[in-house]
Image (cartoon, rainbow, N blue to C red; front, side):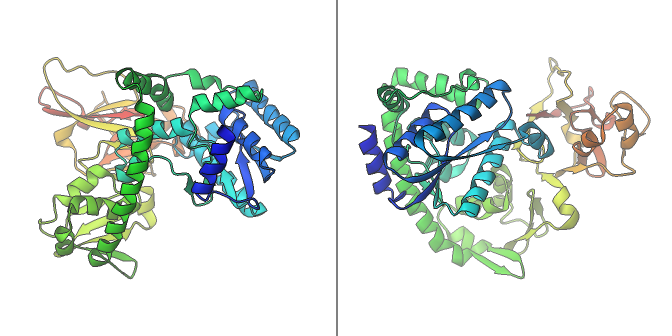
Length: 441
């Protein structure tokens, strides 16, 4: 029975005890509704928290009203907040999904601190963990990403991680629990939904017991990651040292390590260096001094016997560097980059969200930055220079739109006002051999 397995899973993973004060995050969907019911049966000291992201109009308001009803039925206090999610996403250059995630977890943590909750319970189930595995696999998030979702991370616990969706549905049916269905869950335009509706069922056609076997393998991967982290922690003190805010990576010690590129990845990942950039950094281990690499927050310099990592200060925080090997970035603008050979049948798609630039005319690293007074470029199709400020006026951009526009800069020249216009100096011509294609996500 689900209730007994719920108690056993909590005990095995040390999720909570009878005296724990728990904040239940309830959307109104079947998973969180069942979770609230299970905690009610335990007679726990719980409070419900619900986020109204105001993305689906009356449907979002209906979810809020429904969760308040759950609180009344179960005699749980309910906290509700409303977010201007689209506005937050635009201001912070995030997707709606990432904006909603940031908003809700920030609020949950504030509630936990203000009201002294021991744990925040999130209703992720086993199928969510399998879907997350595929998402992380596609993103290239390393070994940690392949271990799936953990039952307990800090004060965030996932007490339903053992349960499959059919098991949760059966429990809801047996107790006549009603729930709300998010209409967006049916759309395959969202990454997770496509994996849920298309990818996993397709694999199950070949391997009928795929969900069970992958779930077991995730447990094994999690155990393997613990061993991996233990070995890494033993290596790092020999390789890394810190002095006056700088991080020094001893290259001789790095190369002694088994799988040195993987070790370097783990060292540089906290400093926001991307996997393609880390690959490029590793290739200059034996090169002469002076080569520099940038992440969104840090700079790495190749010295004679070490790499030196320092934090970007001042103006560096408003500049984002794109190395030659980079193929995708999420911040400050989500974009994908691809280098292709120009062939006779090469076609340029006319879209403001896509830039086609002559690769051989570019100077790396490219820089993403905001515009400043005095900036100028040569708009595509024109011969004379134009101030960026005048271009914004011609485009009738609002102050907020101007502030949210990023410039892609090559050397000292603006190559693209992102999403608006490329520069004539980087246009594709008959002499162009390679093309850098940049697509805004």
